[in-house]
Length: 327
Image (tube, rainbow, N blue to C red; front, top):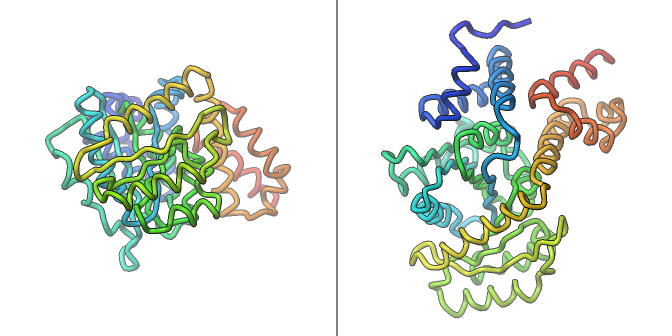
């Protein structure tokens, strides 16, 4: 078995992450982004330490999705300003299109330019989606666990590829869909079923006037207002990141949904479900549907994973070993 590098102290690194130390956060996220065997083992030790010191329902994990050009980045930057004024620490995972040459993120500095680099209460990490369907990369969920240990609010902003971006709803406590006024995309997404996913809809660029109001009206009319996963009534809001209008109301609404999850005691159960979905997808990618069938089928795997209390990579490794032993 590969041994962890001697310079890694998972207890000390986990403690530094919880304190929000930037160097520790960068090291932890780099570790999770490294797919080599030794780094996988180190990452497993780190996540185990973080999980040991947490109840599992800390922070508020928010997903921001919507078509390209809708203004997700500028809206996220405006929300960061509101959250910081409210005294909240904010982490952002911005998932960008992959560079076809390097595999790295193409738009990595898009948010850093809009927030203060000297503000220790904000930490932004850009990462490539690496061609992953669903608008997210495989590293996002483990990275979000690290970020939740350090921040009050963690925002995942997806790559903006359109109708495949439903994975964000299987990972985030609250999903926010940003609509582009007058583009027609929002109505098309309604037909595709993607607007059954978000808990909050916001039409950005309300400063565009009549065209924004028309999109707001179309969404309000077409949307079935009660969310499919509970008794939450999905609001349709209007905002302008450029003019700074509607941002406070959006932040209030996102917080209201997070509070509803906590008060209904559904948050921990949901996050266990997110973990199970992440693990199932990784196993399907490696072993296919035949491998999942060998473990008893998709529903059996999801139930088993949601009931276990092992750390993320420990669960993944245990199931991989079971499948590898049958080959």
